[in-house]
Image 1 (tube, one colour):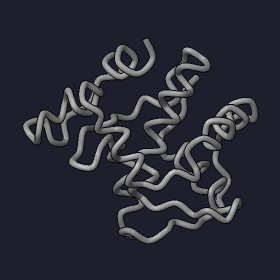
Image 2 (cartoon, helix red, strand yellow):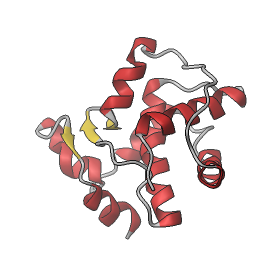
Image 3 (cartoon, one colour):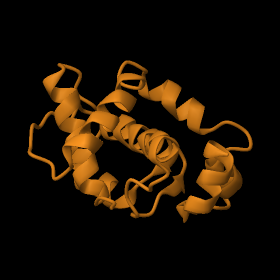
Length: 143
């Protein structure tokens, strides 16, 4: 089973808000990417199937970006009920612990490492907004 990326984003936003650490759209994008990667490492399952694209500031899930772009750089602070199973919430919580206190700019840097899936697709702007295939993410981040 997999989720809609917007549901995962809602869950992440709610957890961050409840812990008094509201998240910006930029950081949400990076956290979504790293949560996807770490969830796959943990379970062998894709957390969501929505496209992850190579944008200038790193991996972005466009459907989530456009949902929260009205916040601009401000924190998104909403507590909403997300449709995520309890066992997966526990896994996501565990993963979030390792990213929640890392500044967005550092997460951007981590996603921009030479040879990363983002770097391979983005190619100094030639691949701006192109989809990063899940197979590439798995090959470079998981294997």
